[in-house]
Image 1 (tube, rainbow, N blue to C red):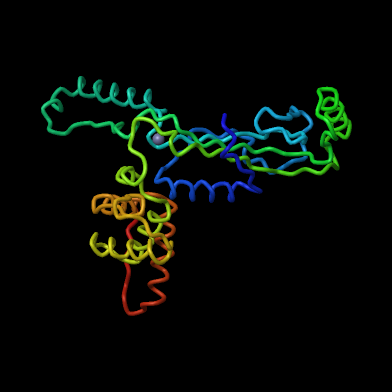
Image 2 (image 1 turned 120 degrees about the horizontal axis):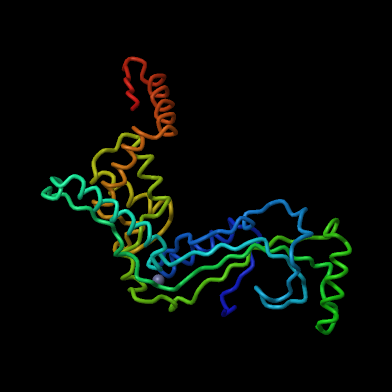
Length: 286
Ligand SMILES: [Zn+2]
């Protein structure tokens, strides 16, 4: 693995911020492939069963470390990790249609979207490691010296020794993408940004129901609040009317059906009732 794009971060938040910056600069989007259990580990007291490493995941700098866990993100045009689930869904649907022959004549079509997946191999890799700076190999590196330092570290039982948690972030080369457009043109296929989604939700709660009005609000939000000057072709920050309508609808239906949102809505209604004492509010929960 190339280590040119390797950077150490003090915590996960800082690493995620760097990933977001990278995505914006390269008009790319990465989604979670997998996260090992230890990646989020905060408790650094029970490391005694962990293996001591020197240079298997990071360039050698003389300091031994333990690996807590990794997280890997795929380019959103990456391999289809749910291909079997989708096949199962299609098979189930076919079975149902066999059982209810009359539905065969129905105009409804069951579509499983898979067009976004292009088998691109570009990945972002994060590793959570704990370094032990007090057990650094002094002077010339040798197997003997590494073994001696490891033995000292084990003898100290990892207790009362200095531990530095680091998130190692490997960002891929901007040219690592395969089978799809990159750069500004790839903005057309970008999924909606989580902050934009959140803003749509808030505006729906504020009563915005018109797509055109929502679009105007979002443009202002991206420019002013996020301070981003993103080309209009980038759908991550400039969703088209259909994207906007879909997310407004999602917010409204979720409000009706999910427990959390029902509670939120109840709070909101109580707030309205306090503010607008002359109006009555009726909330029907499904
Ligand atoms: Zn890609």
